Length: 589
Image 1 (cartoon, rainbow, N blue to C red):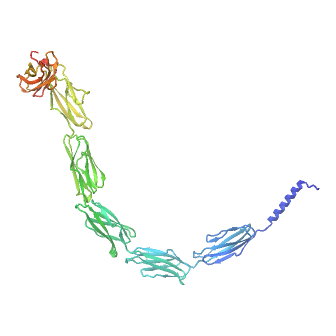
Image 2 (cartoon, rainbow, N blue to C red; image 1 turned 90 degrees about the horizontal axis):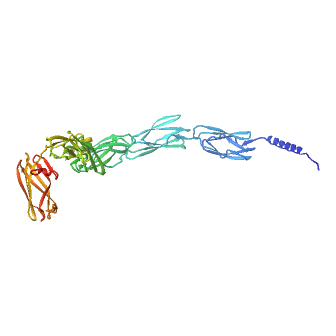
Image 3 (cartoon, rainbow, N blue to C red; image 1 turned 60 degrees about the horizontal axis):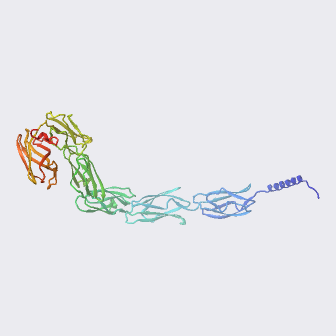
């Protein structure tokens, strides 16, 4: 077997490969077509094109008025369909389609004449009843005629080249809409364009036929669907009108309705009609209005001395209203609607520090023409109470170590004294004041207590004069106390008025005791204590025996002992003696 070296085999394979590639590169690219020039009319056309190519082929630069069934292929023989749209440009047009296969190229030239046609810028017009001008832009590749079948459409002007046709439409006084077709056609009538002219009939239509108006009056904006100018030609004296209108649009007519203050329902018709030659075109609106009312639940009310609300008030009204207050001390008057025609009324003020009753009138009255409908309420407020519940001068016994005064007040209070011997016990009630005396040798003395309102009530003051009597050693002299009886015991007390004053009352209080010194109870009244009052006048230095029958019912009662005595003089002085002080009242004590 003959041996072939491996390097030689590799060289042989490379040589054969290169030789094959050289033969392939020497093959020529080619592409041919069935026709290179296409001339067609302005209508839409469809045709076939055969392509003979040596390899893959491609078509470039295709305009939008040319449609190809395929723009590329790989077969040797290919058939494609070319669709050319109608030419509505009024001018001839052309293009070149470039076909390529490798390095080989060829072209197809397409030339298209314009289509025979008449073109108009619009195919319809719509006119108002008033008529007007209509302009049409016309383009045509042929001579044309304009046919107008009616006498209410006029051709005013024709301008050639880029032709403009100007039409005029007369006013429509007929009751119905009218329409006509204007024909623009070629001389042989094969090509036609139609322009439709539509003209509205004159109309006036009120959108709302019936309107319920506020009893207090109102301004109504009535929408009128009209294609002509219009006006209000009839309304009653309680309705006035004004018109705001633009031709070709819905118009607005304003109706000013007065308040119905006459106590009964009313209604009327308003007539809206065209102006001038269109006056027979009209429509109507019915206006209905209930009568206005306004009333208050009461005519008077009061506010607390310290301020607040005037209480529950109700206003009944079906109209809008204003509030007028003639008193500047009323801080607030507000309303809150809670049903269709009912309002809660809230009238408020602060405290009355004026020391006198004050009043104000609040008036509720309708707006505008409803101002005669009104209701009033009178608001009163008593002054804040701020005074001592005492006479101007409080007389005290020389024995008094303290006393109570009551200030009748609705507000906070501060107390002041003008004399050092008076002071207030702050641990007690705010209206409790105490006085004291160092010994029993002083003569009568006078002090003043001043009460002043606190905070916002600082303008309120009141004073109380305190007069404390000088020392009275023995205002009465008790001479003797006697009892008598077996079961129903009487009581006799003998005493003398030992002062230069007239005594008004003397009240003796004490208990009965038995023979061994124990207190005994009245078996009828079931009480250990007995009080007996002597009613004057008892003049100075007068002595008397004062008797009470059946002071106690008890078999064992033998003696009556005093526990305290209260003496009140006609001049207001009060003296009180307790059990420790009683001995000073007895004779020879």
